Length: 426
Image 1 (cartoon, helix red, strand yellow):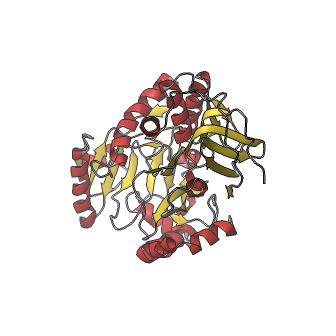
Image 2: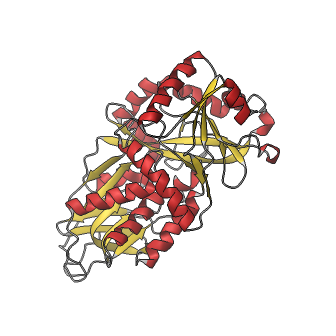
Image 3: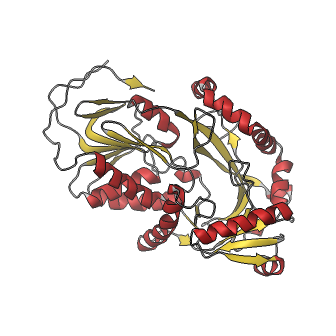
């Protein structure tokens, strides 16, 4: 076990762990707010945006589903506007195509009315469409009514992350790829992170580790009343002959008794259309396929009482999602509710994503952002959709919170460390 030398310099003022869009946005805005601050970002993969950021639907969300006053609603509304502005200033592909939420039966019509009211509360300027108006806008989609939200759009989030990284580097951020953090610890005057390259030292840290968020929280002695449970979202891509099947994003009316939004048709910035995602319990934190199994991840889930309580609450829907994952025709039926022309042969392979879902000890799913703090670090413990859309206001919020709780007035180039023996590793 290595010790931190009693007298040595810090490698950075602030260490950021995680090179997804939230981590990179935070690094960029931290150096904008505090010029001259030495910021070091460590990302375990050889590229930025390798996991959740690079495996999502590419949608710029407007904030339709989120409760008024929640961080999700606030971040999403501000994030959509900021994303459009940043993308256009930095030549990242983006398109404001709008979203239609389509009701196909009486129950969904009632729920759609409630969603329309929430859109009004969140100042999204929704438009109610009757059946004829829906058919006129989207002749290949069927439904009783729809709500159109014009703010929604599509972009390339990995490209957006790379643009933020370019700005961050210009401002002096040191971004290092291929640096998996195997151990992190805190001591009286700072933090340390150990990678295969060695030990990196800083006065403070901001952890944006996504699927590994609870691991890092545990290392830093953050209260661990939650765990990250991975859910795989599986997508299909439609053939090129159906690239023009819709002009908008087409969403079903979500069932409030289910934790996720349901399968939707998504126009992608590359010109093609995807269908998805579902929500299947993954057998590894980075389990992008059924055959991806990591026994240590499974063991952690099975030992967590909140996991079993979550299954008890959501077991029925979980079994349905698993069935539709393994039975392609069941997945197709979800799509045919509002797009009946689709066939099995239209559902072509497309990469899946894995969502990091925080689950509390009582089995409840955390639907809002969860941010925790230790003596020298700030942890993003849950960053649910629309985290990509909201990455700019999330980063701004983290920088603001960081400034409230940690002293950045003094630089740390020559400040010595305490000698530290002992760390918690993954």
